Length: 254
Image (cartoon, rainbow, N blue to C red; front, top):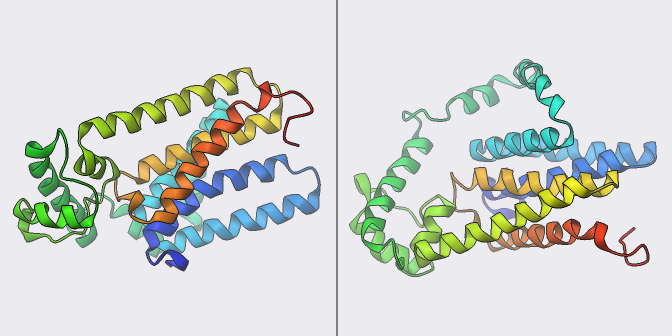
């Protein structure tokens, strides 16, 4: 299922960023009618995520969910084995088979990505410092000379490798520094936050980006400009949430 993103992987990345906030809305709802609405919304998004059949997105969402519940209450990690057992029992065989094929080089999608990464790494041995320039045009001009097994690709299918391709290792370091500051600020805010609702949305802001970064290891997440915009929008929302408790009562967002 690609929806309006023209690609199921892009739709999966969208859901990774949105579902944790849906969970926070569900847990902060004050009335049963609101809880039912948010429960239906989250359920529909999770079902649609399954229908993307994007294994990288599934991994990202599972990681985001694990981060969300551990930050909510570390004791919930004890329930993880039971949760996985329940998922195995209720999931269709097609979904289980698709998920267990992760890492199987006999799978065309997996081998395709691995061969691309091998070719890109060979290319970056020469261009690691400044990259080859941004955009598909630059990538398609240089990459074919280093492609492994004659694999054709529009990008590196890995956000971190593509960042180095675009502008070198310095851009990757800047990107990682932004993420470090983002997570550090939110973690400090969560440690000081006394308002339960604010803390839940801060947890959502952390877990959604964590899941997105895991999925980004299997695809170039910024290939779709709408997904890229949403990622930076979530970072902006997270920055606002980190400073919410510092606002005066009159300025606080109700």
